[in-house]
Length: 319
Image 1: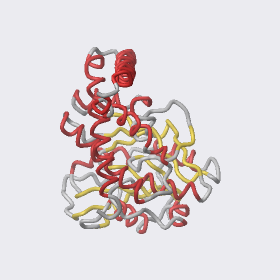
Image 2: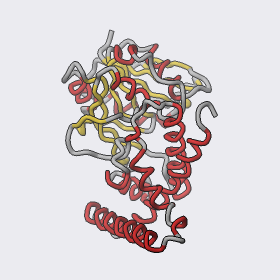
Image 3: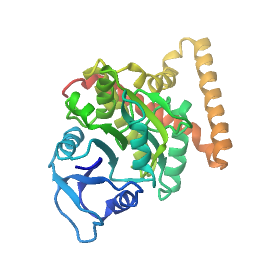
């Protein structure tokens, strides 16, 4: 029996996850096991194996199914999820466990998801802009909050669950979208709290490399949330509404041509907001690129998110 089971979901076991594994093996806390749930069991010789890995093959299944298989094969009383493109900080396990056991009513703990410094310049700028809460709609996935607080969900790229709580809700929905938001909603309905702790840190190599991948990411992000809103009506709408409201304001401009006064108010409001965000981003990151790119990043984010959100709603359950 061990204290913590660290579960990593990956397509195949290769050297790409070495940085993730090394960061786990370098933890100060040592009472843990590592479970890799993969589509293919193609173990390569250059894979880091400083401690034994428990390998679970889960071919061609959803993220939710893979997470459930990781939990089913675990020995720990705590399940810690981290993505295969993340690097955990030195006291990640220790801090996550401490917060999770700080109160009997805490069921889930997550924390800061920082931008990995190895990402290219575009990624750094885009993700730094996205880390500003009033730009991303106070999304826990992208924001870095300075203090510990109760939240509605935490992303599973950096999440600690009490195993008995996972068992009470019978695990994750076996989907590829919003499984983190959905399970946290069910856990909250049981009376448990979801806590964000800024000391529980990982660095993430987001799959955002250029404008195309940026737009695709937020289209998929919005589509998943649109589908989840239709399929899981018990999920709080506050998980989806801020980005949707910003996006709706932006796409309303062409529809207001016949109402010039309203159009002017909306256009001026959005322009003022974009200018404020650009100045704020520049003051925070001290690079002139933020003055130039912030308005465009915001526009493409909101438009692609809103398009995906509408498609998700139209597709609805099971489509």
